[in-house]
Length: 160
Image: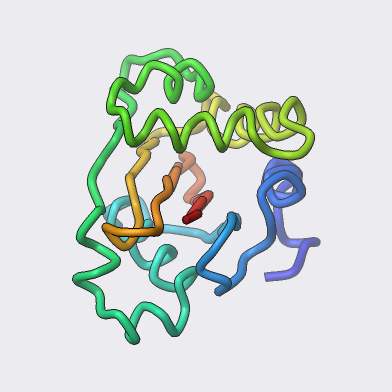
């Protein structure tokens, strides 16, 4: 997908967290059209697998999915405020990742604005955040959102 085909909120999120990649380290943003019937968590895992690249098979899916757990799921009636929602997560491991994503990044104010534009829009119908990593040195967070029009936005953050 070219940049011309992406909404501005995705381009802004990519500017803050990186374009799609298979680096398996750092952060990247993935955007795709998804069907309403598709499970958001399953799609998020597919994007995570792509991001990890060759290391996924090298170390095996069990390694990369061992740390996978839902850290947050936005209730249907919740206010759309991704920054407040992430900051309200109480799990210690997740809180460390949230701090990295929100505060310990270049141009943190712009990054938070990009997150809000991507995930706080009224058309966002689903939002989830998942702990990721290899269960040892690597840990991170994946934020997944889906809009009414089928746009899926996935921000992956993985560090050692």
